[in-house]
Image 1: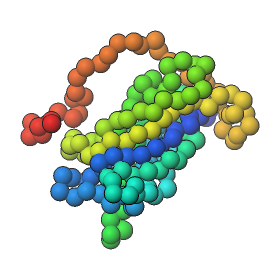
Image 2: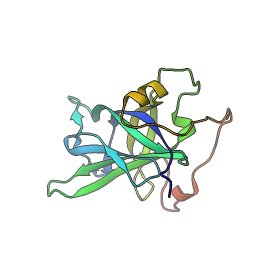
Image 3: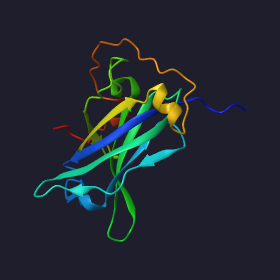
Length: 176
């Protein structure tokens, strides 16, 4: 069986804002980290977050070289936290269509900062994550250890999608 074709992305996890497990328990920012997945078994994670003085902002400022399968259509960012007893709990996650996350111009070397709302497993808001995604060009890939065998083509979508994903609709949750 042939290996799966992949493409390398540079994902920079910048910060998180107002992160909380639920409305009663704000998360302690020193024990939080981000896990990045791209529709594969592999995942990448950041170091523990740094606390911004007198703020509910968590800082990571960490670049991850993420290997994305060519068939992947989305990237998932999940913020996790370690409790005082050492258990790991999910704060929230955001699933982003890959064509939304990548720069719109192929010649663009600058990646834009994106902000996405995190939702917990019940669909409730649990904060915001700020990040950027940039494809690694062929010259950088050949110098590194991961070599791509697929081309990442962006669709020419200029339309706006309006609506709520079906999986997040819950009769007892009121959106604010």
